[in-house]
Length: 474
Image (cartoon, rainbow, N blue to C red; front, side):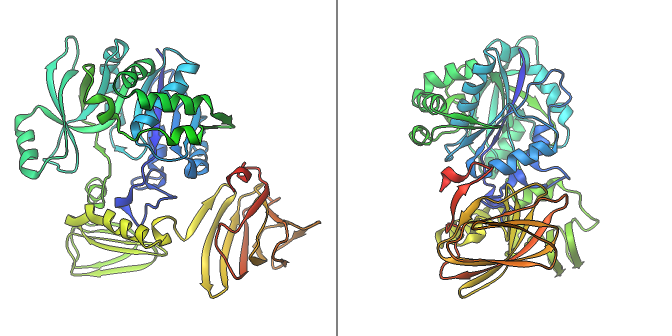
């Protein structure tokens, strides 16, 4: 049986705000290495021979970012399945399994969240080898992390009897996140593992199990896949059919009910980086226990996680704190309360603030833009357009735009005119005029855009042509 990575990239990572945002979430960030968490996950099985191309399942909003990060690795995905709305991990896995059995009826899946860290991936590969025989025989194999401490932020798996001929165990019970006293009891008993949320199973076996325990999920996913379309590397499932799908996790939907659950224990330097404190645990510390990233000055500061992205950050007389500075937000928190950052994100959402959704620099398939200044009836942005890329042919009903080229060469369409601008040259786009910006050169194009008008929201856009197939989205 051929092994296929199935990488689930649907989480938001709100506990790692302000670095993680709704439209640029935790899996897309390089938190512990040069590669992002998604890229590290995509490379985790590279040492295995004859591994199949990976299936990715991600939010539709993240599709171009996911595709670009995979391309940077030189990898070709089997497909990137786009979820129009989040329905938790059980529907996401069902979509991937339905796709794979069409391509390979005997497909074996290694199911991995895209936002976990493993500092010893070869130990994980060895655990896959240990559990592969069980999976081939129809078991649903999960990997239990040998606990290093009585952690209250993870669910646990209790093992039962050891299976013949290997290091796998039948599963006695899945348990919720415990309190401190219960977690200490689990550690002392020695029969409990942290629940990693990583699985090994045949695609057809998962479909059989979800059909038995949650047939409405299978029905909705199958209808959404059957009505879906392949769009380059993306598979667009049918939105209306998928909106009818119940939301449930792999554990709740199947693993806690099935008689086929098997756990393989591993010690692979695993973390789900569920909060700033977890990231502090796995990062290198200085002699005072601090993790420092960026332009940071410390005086009498200990056991702190300190990040400065855009300016000098200085601390004096602090202990056991998290300070994260970004272009538009600063977080200051006690390390002991790191799990509660999610409450701040909820308040930002409730008040309609953009800081929970996007960074000041917003990524697009053609490049990015960054807000520089804004006031009554105007705002200023810096556009960066990748070589060979172009924005859609579009118009705005409520704003005019001035473009000033500060680096590179721009090809501009304005109404019936098409012309080229060089550095230090500019042009004006009137309200209601069709226009397009392109980079025909070999270096990034940098443009200062001054917008003026009665309404400057990003939704004031009508697309007529777009190489990234976004016309249908508006």
